[in-house]
Image (cartoon, rainbow, N blue to C red):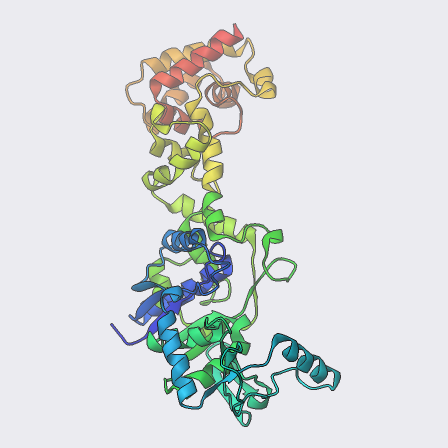
Length: 465
């Protein structure tokens, strides 16, 4: 194992967002390619908004996508003593100070700065030490340098520079004693030995402040890679108005994890013209430098296309296992009817999602379904009854009920009757499936089994009669 260490650090204030999942995936892929360590850290310092339900949703999303972690999950809420120790260290070394300015005073300073056309940052009133009563509330600020430039070479964006005179003296501890986000992120990444930070580009403005903290604490600065955001079709930030943004919502809509992984990684990263990658190929070929600088646009149709591909390529036995909850949601017990993997096999070419597959499978498990009225009126007609009855008799004597055997039976039957398949096929399809939109007749009979297929054919004959 190499000394490369990456992390994914979500805040548990909601579900695992599509954008967060892509960030996690990029970190995971790079750690696996470099044979490094992937760490999961839960940034739950926002006690008011963090919930166990959100933690569970994040963990479930990671597990569904197959993004296993090597260390963690670590919880920031359990590391407050560590943060306190580093705050005290910076104060003792003169690199941080107590600020007694009240919120009202700070607001007045901000308004004056804006009125005078200055950047509304803290003016340093308490920067060089002030004597205040011991019981007066205070925050602790980091004493940032006000001269020079902070520069870093972003692995995606290239060289980025910030003038230090534009940076504020960052609050690192609130008046209630709790640490702030930018501070705890640095302490965690530093003490956990993170070597590369891959995160959304909404964090770029935090980066110079964090670099100054690393340097003040004497820790090496990690490499940074800021990933562009994901946009909806209207080129605004992906949100609920564009559709589902939760990873687990896609699971519930019948998407396969491998389709989601393949889609997310291609939403910003490319490798020539190749569209479909196995997980092993992604690990082998992924590089953060190949991630584009511009935002990716979420395209639900492309995701559906990929999902359809993976459904067609998956083993029927595996899809059957995944399909069971969707069948039960529709009031169907898959164990009470035909063999589910055989049913799945008939529906793979036709189904873009497991939801579509479950809907398409219903007729297999409802023997006395209602016929589609138009289809029945057109095809379950008196002339069809003798053909259906003769076909049922022939099927009853069939020993080989594989697709091959059933196809041979039909060819022999239409030759004997001097008809074309189109003269009996639609009536058979309606008899077996309830309508004319269904998998192939031979597949359906094989999946239903001879006894159930015979029962349905004879039911149709009786209804025609």
